[in-house]
Length: 377
Ligand code: PEP
Ligand code: MG
Image (cartoon, rainbow, N blue to C red; front, side, top):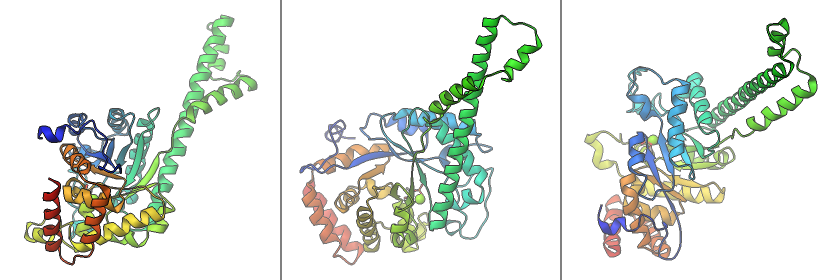
């Protein structure tokens, strides 16, 4: 990266007329965000949990996942870290979970798999919740949401994991406190080797006042387990027409422009034969993004975007003008996008957007944006 661009790393991400937007990281391998820690990102906007699941021979255990997520959350203790639940299927497969189907991108993908396998989902959510204890910077994001039922079912499972974990935590704490209390009591009474020991250790002789006191103590600690914010990816076009119902259920939205483009234009994002048709600057994609941003503002839900579009200078300008609150991208793009945003005014960006929204072809959009970018430098 050029020195010119690196100069902005520690400066706020704001336009020349003071409009701010946050830039966050897309991450999956821990090495990728460790390398990016110095580029001035305001947290992780998309942690792709399927990545660490991929180079393995079996599903990671709850404990393995907890340790991994804790490491990621600890990396940005003062910023939010948005972890996406397992998004396999489509082009992302796990060697130990083979899926064979004719149209993988229209098939068993993302939330569809984890709702069919709640045991996988619950273990992952429990691990996230445990990892978040005492840090409280976790946000959970659901991929490939197409229907309200999927949101309701996911939230039901997240709540189930949360309340079960809380109860377990409380019970474990209570047992620890009880044992400690009993040991102290035995020390005081200097009882050794009698049958009373076992009774005491089993807590049989614990009086009701002490029990209530220990329970209260355990309750206080267990109440520190936080229920994180839950949001969804907007990447299947159906969600554009269900924004109100979605907004009533979740805390935030994040657009996956890679998939949204693929599904709006019916163009496989990985098929080189049709690669020339895959373009997030297609007027229909931009209109969809504009509608999403407008509706999110109307329903008062924070909106971010974590697809490749955010890391393209012209994309970032349009998204800024549409009112996106956060853009999430690969670390090496953060300084460049911050530089662009600092060198444009919000009014200028709004004018560019208003003109772009009148254009009818992708080609017109590109040539107009290229002209505008040259003017910015
Ligand atoms: C997207 O679809 O834009 C996205 C960010 O998710 P992924 O690329 O992992 O599908
Ligand atoms: Mg996606």
